[in-house]
Length: 165
Image 1: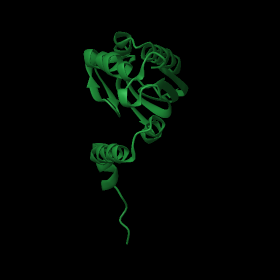
Image 2: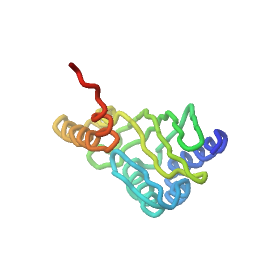
Image 3: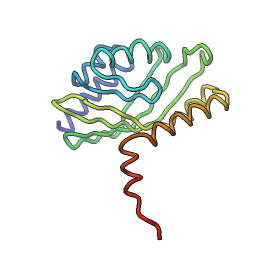
Image 4: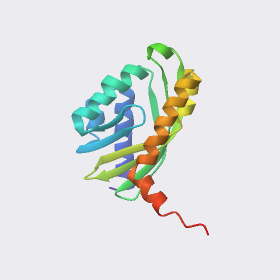
């Protein structure tokens, strides 16, 4: 994929996410594509990705959701972009609270589409903006920590650690 083709895909991806068009969002992915979401978990395939965007994310984030990507780079098969997103929560415990999140998105590309999507965001900042109580926040951060440590890439990284003498 060229840089220009990735930028076009990124515009479709962001526009579909902002509008809550789950089908258009899912069409940015290969049929076996995976969206790794730090809140809603992994979603695989068009139907599951469309469901996550429309029926989970937009249920909670509401109609004012924004997601802008900046500084995209693409080497043909892997691409990255930084982002800002915002929404007003519809979650009953946090309804009406506005959240702004920054992040870095990683796209693995195949046949002009996304086959694997993940992001790195500071979810703790989002939870602080929502007013999540400290005990609940600690529980979530502990879960995210376990998930990071259990990832195969993390395990391989730790296995390569230099021996300190």
